[in-house]
Each structure stands twice: as structure tokens, then as C-alpha cells.
Length: 511
Image (cartoon, rainbow, N blue to C red; front, side, top):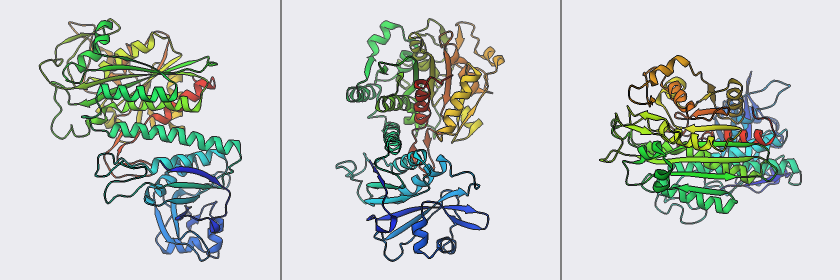
């Protein structure tokens, strides 16, 4: 993991492999951003012109390398685009800084140290830059030749991640600045933990091995953990989780991981879909739709990471995570279309499509979480392709049983840099869940499938509990090229939203 340090040193005299500066898109061409004054001075105030000659415009995601001026101890200047220059009264927002830092960190793989001279107008900017660095420097090489065999090692012919990022403009003795870096490290490292889990192949990440990973982390961070195996699930009547996991040789698990604070007055519960591999079951997915289905446990990974982050931050709130873990496979013991499952809540569900399995495991976990009567529940799931059709591959959908709570969750997501959009829950769609033989079906009409899934889940939330559902089917796994601080593969989507909600709970402002 890249180390973050605060530095008051001047850029010219700092020993590093590169100096990272920001460049914005101005009305008449590129504009050198605040923080790079010393670098611009070394170019006799003409750095913007040099960058324009090299083709730079300051657009978001743009990166330009040029030799450092004479007298600099660093040999290289890396100019990264921040997007449109803000007006005179405003500064660069956190997400612009986060993306720029991530772009630079990824480009500096193999470097031992880089100084980041990006715009800093307070602790929030330092946190955004630090977080962007940690997320942008991420790579997953555990399964490549020589990958992960030594600290900082990379696979054969690869490069180690950036070793250290010195954040210029930060004060090492300032409590707010130190706290900002500490939060960036806790959230960044846990988000990267979620990415690792999503990227791990399903032959190694089974429900049981996932549960053991949680147990190890719980021991390290002082969390309480409870694992229900197939025997305990059978005894407890968890028909949804057992039904989905019944076709696999890898038995299902329900994992509860809890962080408690002695002074906490409020309790927030997270529930994560953890399908470690989704073949679709008997309703088998068509060719071309299976290759990335190891990512179907991204919701559980996000929940796990967020609970650990809450513990690392010492938040004054009780935060409980429920991970509904199963592998959805076709076999002689798999649930069939037409089967009826008796859920943990007592409701019966007619399974019409075994590839609509996520809502079945979530239903049991939601009801289990409800029995503890938390102040609010948020579930996270790669649940429906319909949400991807509606919102694309970078935006998560937010549904809730309370409009005010939905707004709070949506705003938390936007604040942390996770694009989201509030979605409705039209009551007329519930008619599509009617069954002739059971209390309800697991699928309804085709249109509005993402909304119908939310209506299904709402039936398993305890009365009087505020609840929100995050459908992360689009942004959980990036099949395209890396961008900003987002890598190819697992993204860790929803971790930052959940952590922010835990902070709001601690501050007494969730609702």
C-alpha cells in the first residue's frame, strides 16, 4: 500500500521521482492550478504555455509529463488535468482532486516517491488527494507470476505501486491535517480490501473462505463475528439462503460482523449480497454473461469493508454488517423454477427464476437484521441488470421506504464521489409479485425490474425501520479501461457511501 506523508517542503528541494501538479481548463487555455507556484516560477511563469505547446488543455483525466526545471531535485513534472477552472469564489471540489490524484498515482507505478503539489485549501482537500492516491495506485496481481511474493512486489514484467506520496501543503503537526490523512488511509485501505475480494476468483473465494476472512479481520480490529453454517441455517429456517446455495458443493453462510462503541446511542445495520459466483442456477445465464460473475458478492464486500472502516475510525455508533453468502449453481440439488421456499421471516416465495437469487438471500439477511431493531438498514447488492439499463455502468440506484431517508443516502453517495440516483417504488408493480401457490413470487413483469426488486426486498424489512437499497450492478465491476482512481475490475463501490452513513449516525444526523 502506498504510504501517505504530509510535507511543508518546497517542491524544488524535495527529493522525489516526480512532482505532481494540477492544470485546469481555462477560458483561454490551460491554467496552472494553485499549489504549483514554485514550479511555475521555475519556468519563468510560462508553464501554462509550455503545457499548451505539449497539447495539454487541463481536461479531466489528462496527464502530461515534462522534464523538471534546472535546480529541482526531482527529475520529472507530471501535470494532471483537474477539469474546468472554478470561479473566483470557489475552489476545486473534492472529487476533481480525488480523480486527478488517482490518475497521477496510477501513471507513477514503479516510482518510489512522488510529491503531490495539488491545490490544498484545507483538511478536506488533503483527504481527497490522499484517498485518490491510494485508490489510483491499486492493482491486483496476486495470481500473476511472482505477484504478491514480497512487499511491494509486482508480477513478472510489472511495476510496483507508487511507494510514497508526499502531500505538499499539509502540516505534519496540524491535528486536522493528520486526521484527514488518517481517514483517507482507513477508508482507502478498506475500499481496496473490498476490491481484492471482488477480484479474487471464485474457486478461492467461497462462502466459507469469505467467512474465514471476516473472522480474521474481526480478530484484528476487535469486532464481534458470528457465522451461521448450513446446519445453523437449516435449524434457523433460513430458506432463502439455503435455497440459493443448495445447488453448490460450497455450502452457504450468513455472517454477522459487528462494531460497537461504548458511548453509541444509535445503531446502523448494513446487509450485503454475497453470491460468490452466480451461474444463474437452473435458469442458466447465456454464454458471455458468466465471465465476471465472481463480482456478484460486491455488496457483501462493501458491507464488510465499511464495518471495518467504522472500527478503524472509532465512530461513536454501533454498526452491524450482515453478509448473505452463497454460490448459485445448477445441480440435482439446486432450487428449480416453480419451487416454493419458506423464508426466515415465515413468508413463502415461489421461485420463478433462479437467476433472481440475490433478493432471496438478502430477504433472509434483512429479516435477521430487523430482529435487532436498528435505527436504519441499508442493503447493498449487484442486484439487477435493469438498473444498469436505467442508469448505465457508473451510477448506483437508491430506493427506500422513506423519502427523507432516500435523500440522505443519495446525498451521502454524491458527497463521497459515488454517482447515484434516487429511484421510485411504484406500488402498482407489486401486483406482479402475486403468486397462486405462495405469498409472493421472486420476479414479476419485465419492465421496471430494478424497482420491482426493491419492492420485493421491502417486504422483509421490520416495521418502523428506515431502509434503503443500493443497487450497484453497474459500477461494482469496471470491464473497461481504468479511469481516474477507478481500476479495471472490482471498484469497491458503496464503501465510501456506507462509511459516510455510519459517520452521520455517529453525529446523530442520519434521517
